[in-house]
Image (tube, rainbow, N blue to C red):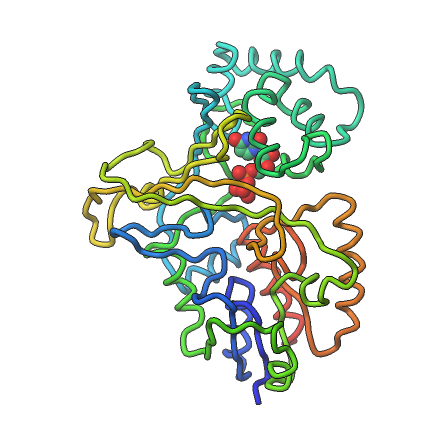
Length: 370
Ligand code: UDP
């Protein structure tokens, strides 16, 4: 008999298993996929750690989380500075003086500020949706060229129908600073995320290719308690209806050239290009392999966004009103399950950054094991 059955070997499940194991509890981690790591999983191809489920750039202001993960990996000095490609025009992201200079020819912060002020005047009162929020942050020109197309491709919904918090992730700066994140700590695990998660799960029993929901009773009987990190609506057999997710598909190619786009991430912000962005994986590690040698080839992934349908991999929760309300109802059901608790991006139906997942699970452990 196990003390804990942990369903899902992603960050939430792995960290919980580590913490429980270190406190003397017997754990079994299962995952329906054939690998650990959930969506942070990386696979080494041609000496390059390929982010199989999309770019994961670790960043945080949370010292506890940074130090915690640093027990299992060394983070490199990667800083995310994506480039936006709008019909062949290149702009720096996030929105900063380089972006404003390219967009309007302005040179000083004061000129940029004036331009933004001029353009944001069209929004009266509190922004009510993403479109209004974006225009009130950076004005209509930037909204039209760098936000609208990208956001509508990514979410499959009009910016007017999306919540404004999505865009609040992006900093707006009147300085020449291309660092995408406002984070004290940032980097990519040296050797890839998979090695980091392997170390988190060191000496813990893991069953891969095991589908909890298809034989729930069998699994439940194996453990005193269950930590479930899969989709909350799937757990309840969609009894109250489907929660909506966005799914992502990656078209990955190995190219016989050493440098395709000169940057880890290029966002295609127009509405015609069918992909949202192209990731060139080698630049997460400066084009070097584990021995510090230049890698002769390169690997790129074009990312296509689509509406989730049963059978697809769920990626982003769509936290609009309808889904948030439905989630509240599932959460109330979840609270009646006394031997199970729900955690992580899918278990809590939340657009979680990696650091927030680790913070949440560590706090949960403080509570559970106090
Ligand atoms: N965004 C945008 N243009 C860009 C990059 C981001 O408008 O070039 C907005 C968009 O609304 C998007 C949000 O910022 O949904 C978050 O994007 P990001 O790429 O940071 O999300 P991730 O997929 O990396 O979590």
